[in-house]
Figure: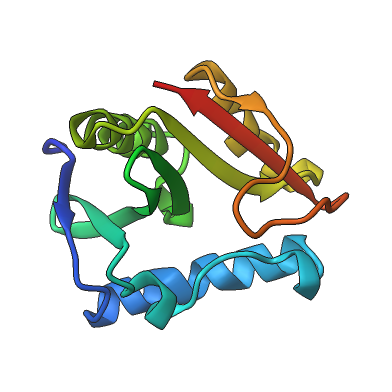
Length: 155
């Protein structure tokens, strides 16, 4: 019997989280050229303007996500990742819903994200589109990049 997904804040220091994030970076680097890989490293995810969550099910770390505060009314989704063995089970959708609820509770008016434009990122783009995200121009410090897809959602 599978238990409910538990999403909780994390300090990005535990060995299991470090391992999951290493897998995330490896995957991002395998799909995008180095100059187009915008995933944050461990120190980047520990910044004061970032909140990081872990998702667990049946005692296993199955995913993670982060929310970066760009300013008092704007956020950016970072490091959305589901462990390979747990993809297709709704974990990414649950994490995204958690981020959306958090952003609304914080009073954000808009959320942004950057993901890849390559075929390997199609499931992520489709997930975001199902939740109302639409493509947009680069935001914050990002620049036009044929390997990037920028998306936004007004809350």
